[in-house]
Image (cartoon, rainbow, N blue to C red; front, side, top):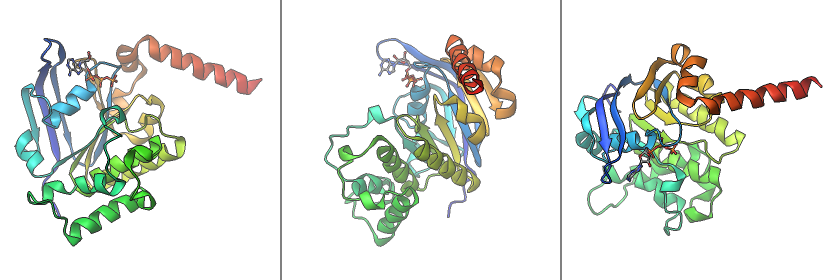
Length: 258
Ligand SMILES: Nc1ncnc2c1ncn2[C@@H]1O[C@H](COP(=O)(O)OP(=O)(O)OP(=O)(O)O)[C@@H](O)[C@H]1O
């Protein structure tokens, strides 16, 4: 049982990569537990860079506070779990589904990494919760896109972190898996977790997210979904891309009427 109130505070965060490119600048927002927040922005707007900053994988200027602690301290306490974009994973790496989910328990083990009975039970529970227990001995490269996503979700569940970051969890998954992932995120939200999820699937955002942070290298809009997920803000963030989506929706409505 954890007694931390989960919170994430990002203040004036700027990331310059080694090639001199400023990927994000002056990003500021605050979130507290029991929420699902969508992180929205076009390709290259800096969503993954922001996740990497929160995970301590890049060193930003500015300040990130997790449950009242600096990033390195929060990571040592297993307070943040990360579900990466599929492109960032080496699927040829020879590990089984069970091995990947067990990685979520590494932060609880000593340097010998010998799992206890509790670690093994948590891994089994996590696999069952996302319905991949039957795949436990499969090599991760031998899975479908949706199954791969579930494996990394299970790793995050096994880690039992208060804060869960998901980078495009719906890319390449079918509608059934997408709904299953959304239901799981809602359950975790109701259990008090703080969930930050980047997605290009705008149509599902209002039905499962409570808040949104919209970025294009810096924050363009942030707040409750009712006040932030407006056509005006979406136009600012997505511009012509969104107009095209509307056009397609209108077209399919017309087809139904014929
Ligand atoms: N390691 C790197 N070195 C230099 N520039 C980088 C690096 N990683 C990302 N960038 C650049 O930083 C910017 C933001 O990239 P990032 O991957 O954070 O965007 P994103 O919003 O996650 O995009 P997408 O929706 O396509 O996944 C882009 O212009 C990208 O080219």
